[in-house]
Length: 174
Image (cartoon, rainbow, N blue to C red):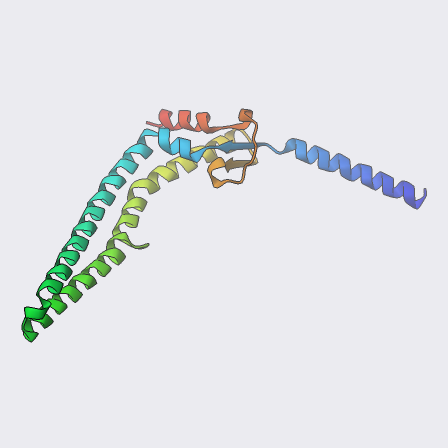
């Protein structure tokens, strides 16, 4: 057997193996945004989170308005204030600026109250969704289940969309 014949046989063998492997891979996808929009628990958690965020945003706006008012008052009266009164006002303004900065960090920052509340309210819902997706994947022998929201899927046959199945399973869990 010549070198060319041997290479042709190897090439055909590789094509057969690759073809059979690719035929065995089972892939599905979900639209996690649709799941979050249609799953009652997710909507309820998001509504609670939105209420908390609104409270914090209102408080933040109140602090900013107070700072603006103090600054305007200071500018209006600065020239007629005594040195002592001017220093008191400046300290009051600086203290309020510190409070606003602390509020931003402690309430709105990456480790702040709003993100902790998000983890508390939305975290369990996301975990439940993940478990249902894993259950479907295991029971129906999927090798991969992708999320269309991640932006990695440019085209997918709707026959492989598992979103309705996930929503059905989530509703059955109640």
